[in-house]
Each structure stands twice: as structure tokens, then as C-alpha cells.
Amino acid sequence: MVRDAGALRRPPPIGPRGLVFAGIAAAGVWSFVLLDVPAERLLPGSGLLPELRDLRVLGDFLSRAVSPALDYESSFVPDSAPPLLMKVLDGAHRTVAYAAMAMTLSLLLAFPLGFVASSAWWRGDPARVTTATRFVPPLLFGGVRALIAFMRSIHELLWAIVFLAAMGYSTFAAILAIVIPYAGTLAKVFSEILDEAPRDTALALQATGASRTQVFVFGLLPRALPDMAAYAFYRFECAIRSAAILGFFGLETLGKFISSSFDEGYYGEVWTYIYALFALVLVMEWWSGALRRKVTA
Amino acid sequence: MTGHGSSDGLHVADVSVVYAGLPALDSVSLGIAPGEAVAFVGPSGAGKTTLLRVLNATVRPTSGCVTYRGEHLGELSANDLRAVRGRIGFVHQSLGLVPNLRVIQNVMAGRLGRQGLLQSLRAFVRPKPAEIEHAYEILERVGIPEKLYERTDRLSGGQQQRVAIARALYQDPEMLLADEPVSSVDPARARDTVKLLTEISSEQGLTLCMSLHNLDLARDYFPRLVGLRNGKIAFDAPVGEVDPDEFQRLYDLEQGEMLADGA
Image (tube, rainbow over all chains, first blue to last red; front, side, top):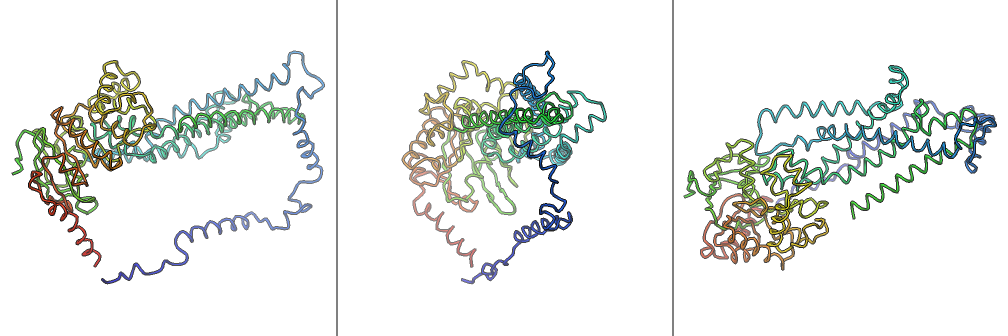
């Protein structure tokens, strides 16, 4: 037997993968050079770190972390104001409600967009190839993928600023600012989950004479749904944070209360609201974990 | 010879299938009469799976033609193709069940080829009593009626295979194709599976084609054996006329060629 000379040749010490890693490392170094941050300027007193006065504010704020307010810190509270803890509950409830509304609309958009953006949706029947199946799908597929890339390339805060400038503040504008990037991100991830789902069921159902839509709905979707649900739960958690953040733009959520209390210097109240937000995220975590255990058990 | 053009049964005439430049089937011709039971034997890579997929019209031949009951499969419209596939039950090697659905939902997926989308969604969400009863009867025949509402991934490998068989039977097929149905179960169960499929086929008058590694099983349950090697038919004969040496040669020749390739 003749040995194949090619099979015995050693691979080069730095292959293509090594070059990619080296490139990423070089980009990290380059970013420091670009920002012009010499190491000594990171030391105290060099001007880059905050002044002592600023540090005192930071200290005041952080020290209230262990003593969040249980009642209003202001000396003047109108009689009509609800107790602080009721206000916290109300804010938490509104935050969840707005997040849920944003997620519902996002999911309604993300399901069809994600389907069309998956290669699986367009996977034809290998026993039937026509001119239409060859040219139309790639056009629609590419168009939808470009659309969802555009939707998620702009952050919800940026969308909020744009909508605020265009139509002034409204709850609908704030929700829309969340929905657009969220629907784009959900659609992208849904399409990837669908494409990675096992295909054996789809092939088996195709063999029973199922139509392409039936193959997708009964063969592929049920195999992708547990992962899609888990991701949607994670995004719901993100939506709660986004809804809170949009409070700084006037959406009636915990963020709005945080913003106004912070401006007044009522750091105790700020911490109370932050802990409420934290509790919301914990509840979400517990809920999605419980659901996931049930699905995968 | 192949009886090409006859309006009865399934006829394969000079079919070749090429995947990425490599021939998976090479000028294969054979005819299968209604109600016949045929085993395709040979080593892995011989083309058994491809031949089965050509038979149920999920792989289009690169050349040659397949006729089923007088219809040319290559010339059918999408709807007619679905109708033909709907009449052929296929038990896949990987089963192709949805693990996170109930057994009844997997079984009832067998009817998709005869339903529109809305009808199939209705049957999935709210099966009619008659449909439930039918699924139950089929599960009873394959030996696992008590699993009707069980989640499919809670079943053992052998039980899941029976669900796949039940789904094929729920199609109410004229023909059953099974791809190595013994590879997903332990050897003791393998014989049961082959026995079950041959019994059901003869009870219901179904044509049965099965690919098998195991010559003993093929000889015990099939009156006709088709030996495949490198995409070609090496022999096609009644079981009494195939001697074990001929079967063994399917594997020997392959080894000879692998050595030739490596030189």
C-alpha cells in the first residue's frame, strides 16, 4: 500500500482559528489605543475618576441600600397620596402590565416573521423543484431577514426618542419603542431555533403526504416550542427592565418613580423601587424555571 | 421482466439516484405486486434506504421512472404526490415522532396527507370520538393500547417504535415500507417487530417492503429477497433460491472494494 503523503503532513501551528483569536485580541488592544486611556490615568486623582464630592453622593446613595424607605421621605406629602408601599405595588403592577403588553405584541409579530425568516419554512420538497420554488423563496427570505435585522439594530431607547420627537409622549409610543426591537430579536432567535430543531419528524410527516405547512406546524414547530418558550420568558424578563427604563421617558412604571425620587435626593425611596424591580425579576426567574422543568421532565 | 407499464402494483424501471455526484442507486429495476412481502438485504450504504424513499416518492430518481398503480410518480402534481404518499406508510429508522406530544397525537399525524390544514388542526386539538377509537384499536393491535394518552418520550424505545408503526397504520395504507426497523430495538425485540409487521401486512392485505441487515430475519419472514450492493441489485429471488454464500458475498465484495479504493 502506498501512503498518502498529504495525510501525514502536520497541520500548521497557527491555523485559521488561531488567526481569528489573534485578530480579536488585536482588536481589544486597538480599542484601548483608540480611546487613549493610559494605565496611569485610571489611578485616583488623575481626573478620570470622580472627585471626592461626587464620591460622597455615591456613598450617600449606596449607604441607603441597606435601609430602603418604607414611607415617603418628603416632609410634605399630600393627603391624596397613597402609602409608599401601595405606590410601589402599583408601580410594579404597571411595569409588569406594560411589559406584558409589549411582549404580547412582540410575539404576535415575531411568530410570523420568525417562521418566514427560518430556512426551514422554505425547505421545499426535494421530489418537487420548480422555477417558482427556486427563485421566489430566496427573495422573500432575504427581505424578511433584512427587515428583522433593521428592527433590532436600533435600541428601544433610541426608538423611544424617535417616537417622542415624532408624536410626543404617549403610552402607545413607548410600548411601540419596545415592541419593534423585541419583535426583531425574538423573530431572529425563533428562526434559529426552528432551523436547529431535529428534522426527523418533518421528514416522516412529509412521507405521510402532509403538505409543507402541515409538516412545519406538526413536525417542526412542536420540536422547537420548548426552546422558543424558554427564550420568550427570558425576553419577558428583559421587557420588564425595558418598561422600567422607559419610565424615565414618562411611561408610568417603577422607572418613573425612581427617576423622580432620585431627582429629589430621596435615595431610600429609590432603593425601595429598585428592590421591587429585583423581586419582579426573581419571580420571573422562578416561574420560567418551573415551566422549563415541567416541559423537559 | 419488470412489467413496466402494468397498472398493478409498484414498478421501478432503470432507476438511478445520484447524491452530490455519488451514485446511491444504479440502474435498479424491479416490480412489486400488491400484497407481496419483500426484504431488501445488504450492507449499510448499499442503497436500501434510498430505494425505499424512491418507492414512496420522497426521493426523486435522477433517471428512470417509478410507476405506482399505473401512475408515473415523477409526473404527478403536488396534490397527487401527497395523495400517493398518503397511501404508503413508512416506518423510519429514526421513527420521527414528536417526543413532547401525546401518543395519540403522534398516531393521528398519520392522517395529515388526507386532511387540509384546518381539518388537521381540529383533529389535533379536538379529536372526534371515532378518531380516538380508531387510534386506540391500532394501538391495541401493536400491543400498547394503555399508552394512548401517555407523553411519547415517557415510552421505551420498543414502545416508541410501535407508536411509529401505529402512525403508519393510521394512514390506512395500501403499502407499508420499513427502514431497518430492528436497529432501534434490542436484538430480542427485533424478531417481534419483524413478526408484527409481516403479520399485520398479511392480515390487512398490505404490500410490505422492509430493509434488513439480518439475513436470518429476512429468510424467516419474507418469501422474496432482494440483495443490494453498491446501489445495484445483486440478486432478486424467492427465499428458497438464495443461498447464504450469495448473501455473504454482498459483504465480501464491499470489503474488496474498500481495499481497492485505499490503494
